[in-house]
Amino acid sequence: MTFADELWSGLKSALLPIDRHALARAVTERAAAVLPPGERVVAGHPVEAGEQLPEPPRPFRQQAFSAQRTTGDRLVDGMGRAEWGLHRLNPVNAVVDRWDEGHHRDTPQLSGGWESLAGQLAAVLRPRCSFRYLSVLLVTGHHLHVVRVRLAGNRREPMAGADAVEHAWRVERRQAAWVRNRTDVRHGTHEVGFVDGSRVTFAFTVGGYGPVVATFPRRLRHTDPIS
Image (cartoon, rainbow, N blue to C red; front, side, top):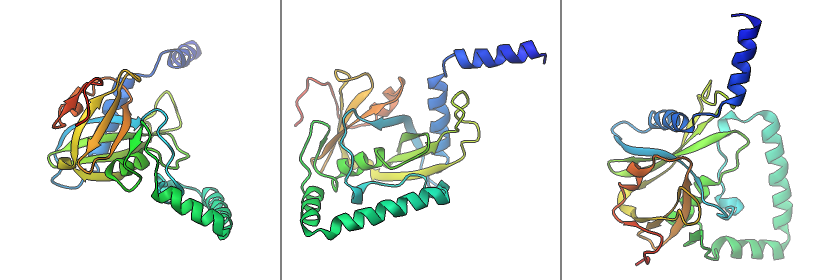
């Protein structure tokens, strides 16, 4: 390849947009590969936290890809834990924190508290993470799964060398009561309700999510009441 060809190839790569649908298919396949034996994928698609979904309190917030973190990352975490410990030594802070952790105030994005099924899913979709990654919602015969796939640093080839995958969450499908289309908020935004009465907003990152939505027992429009 001549210098001119290499130059044109680099410019073309920089100017052309990433095929987000191809990326969605690739991360979904990568995520499905880490499911336990016997789990057959019915549908799957990348998802993210819904707009304005609150950040989980510290006890409920996960650390994503902890095995991939460097010594420097762990040092910073240690400093953060020390600062948190000093914060909690103040009895007033400790009481207020325990109240906040145990008495989540419902919002349009999350209802039911952080220990509810919706709260668990919300926390999974808002972890601490210093890497680029995508979360994938996988529907199998009996479960809903969320799997995180770490992306490469190269934004033009996000799957190049992206071999870090971690299973983040699982719940039985029968625990999901309904899903509601909230594209009135933003394209791809949906709300899922669980049998414990909790609900949370999330968003599909790109089109083509119809097969996942079709697996829920009840599918509501944004104008339909929740009952």
